[in-house]
Each structure stands twice: as C-alpha cells, then as structure tokens.
Amino acid sequence: MDTGLHKILLVDDENDILEFVSYNLKKEGYEVHTATNGRDAISVAMDVRPQLIILDVMMPEMDGIETCEEMRKIPELSTAIIAFLTARGEDYSQIAGFEAGADDYIAKPIKPKVLVSRVKALLRRAEHTGANTTVISDDAAIIIDKNRYVVIKEGQELELPKKEFELLALLYSKPKKVFTREEIFNAIWGDNVIVGDRTIDVHIRKLREKIGDDFIKTIKGVGYKFVD
Image (cartoon, rainbow, N blue to C red; front, top):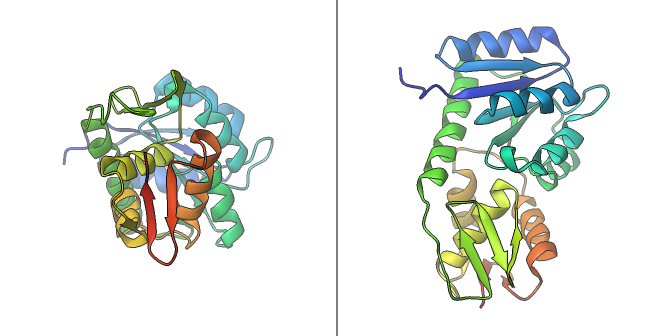
C-alpha cells in the first residue's frame, strides 16, 4: 500500500479512542502522532506538520473548535486538512466547526474500514488541491495564487482556511457561471462526504466578510456565482 508517508495528528482526551484510531491508521502505513488536548496538539502540529489533523470537539483546556481556530491562524498549518471526530451530531456543532475552518466531520462510533476510507478520501483531496499551482488570474481586483495558497485583494494578501480558499477558487475559475449547490458540494467536499445543509452558506458568509459582499452573488434556489 502507498500512503506517501502521510502524517496524521490525532487529538482526543480519551486514550481508548486514540489507541483504536492510531492502531487502524498505523496498520495502513500512516505516520500517526497523538495529543490529548488542544494546546499540546498545536505544539505537536508545528513540530511534525501533518497533512491531516483529526480533532475531538469536547476536550479540556482548549476544545476542538478553539483549537481549530488557532491552527487556522498559523500559516504553516494553513494547508492541513482538519476533520472533527465527534459523537456530537447537532447541526450547531457542525456549523461551529466549519466556521472555525474545519474541512469535514467524522462521527463516532465509526467502523475501522469506514474510518480508513474517509481518511484516504481526505488525503486524496489534499493532494488534488495541492497539485494545482497555477494562478487563476493576474489582472483582476482579486488574484488567487494556488501556489502559495493566498488571495490578494488590492495588494493585500489574505490567508483563508482551506475550504474557503477552494470555494473561492472554484467560483472564480469560471466567472459569471452559476455553480449549483450540488456542484459545489461535489467539487469541494466530495460526494461521499456528509455535511450539513448550511455548510456552503457558512463558507460563503465567511468569504464575504473577508473579500467583500460584491464578488459572490447568490442565485436563489440554485447556487452561487463570482462576479468581477
């Protein structure tokens, strides 16, 4: 099996969860690192630079939501995939997680084969995104540089969470084209990933807060488009 020496960071305050998940991922050949709280997780992440970070939501000292928010502020971790491993299935928890910059949710309990499948899918998405290093535009109000994973607006660089960046890049890849919600889900999250109905809306709102309200237009009942 070829995992490309991917590094995965697991963060959970329950040792049995850490042991279970670590065992199944190490068996697949992944390099697995662990932490039992958010503060340690940030330190470990800076040391090992994992491609994938799996966070529990409910943890002492610093919960998963806060940990995710702090990680997304660190440029060295900006391209890491972050997924929450949690038993909480409430819509609020998912919305809060995506607003914090999470890429996906993995619900407890989860069968080993399903866990491995989800992890492989997440890492494939990371590779696919990282492989495209072209600059979409160099003559516009907004420049999207996929090589450095930054957005440049009026000469100012903006570092966006991974999913926000991918969503903006998708919309701007074909200005004025209306992307349906289904197209966006499949392109950004994958059709095998289950996310809440409001996930796209949350990401669009966060984008508008950062780049302004004029660039992304809502087409009611259909989806969104980029207008230059």
